[in-house]
Amino acid sequence: MKDIVKKQQDYYYRKAKFEGYRSRASYKLLQIQERYRVVRRGDIVVDLGAAPGGWLQVIRHLNATAIAVDLQQIEPLEGVTSIRADITAPETVIKKIQEIKGQVDVVISDAAPNLSGVWSLDHARSIDISRSALKIATCVLKTGGNFVVKVFQGDLFDPFTREVGAHFSFVKAFNPRASRKQSAEIYIVAKRYAGKREA
Ligand SMILES: C[S@@+](CC[C@H](N)C(=O)[O-])C[C@H]1O[C@@H](n2cnc3c(N)ncnc32)[C@H](O)[C@@H]1O
Image (cartoon, rainbow, N blue to C red; front, side, top):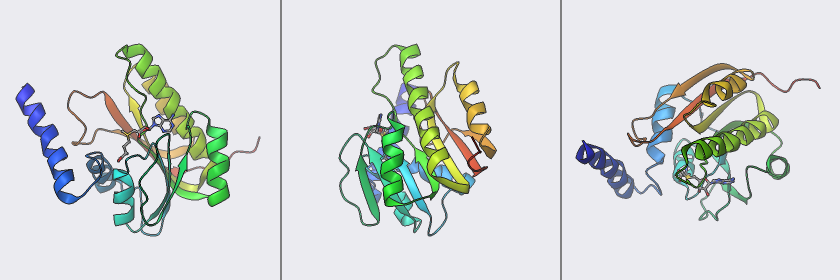
């Protein structure tokens, strides 16, 4: 069993090397895109937790442009504006995005906390980052825009999915084949943002 899992990891790792992607994560976004068509030609996409840039390459191949946010520096890519910032301080990130582009078509987040090995802590941190991604999305998305966010599964997953569902007319959890079999990660795909509510 271990060998099969390893073989699959190696498959996407080798495929990424062969096809020139910066990370094997590219295939997760390609599989999300194949199923749900979240990004369209000409879209402006905010990519949260974007380093090293595998998802950014996919966005560019889809003829969309991107604003990339990460704690780490991202190697420059044509059609991508990078912001070095912490997503868990969403107000700062929102301000920086809005300085570049008032509103965007899609927000995607592959951000993940550094794993401590303590499951409840890692799960809570993952939800914390995902909730910040949702906050950013609801401030910068155009009405009708799409949102994709990675979450580690656990007891806070269902309540968080409902929080996302309150803002979008379509919400599904999706497990791409390229996710490692032993990984607890899952992606929430949300389409058609309902727009900002009056305070
Ligand atoms: C799995 S990697 C993303 C891979 C990327 N999607 C790709 O295709 O190359 C997760 C990223 O999230 C970033 N990250 C984690 N916590 C963050 C935070 N609070 N603010 C900004 N970025 C964060 C990490 O620095 C890391 O680069």
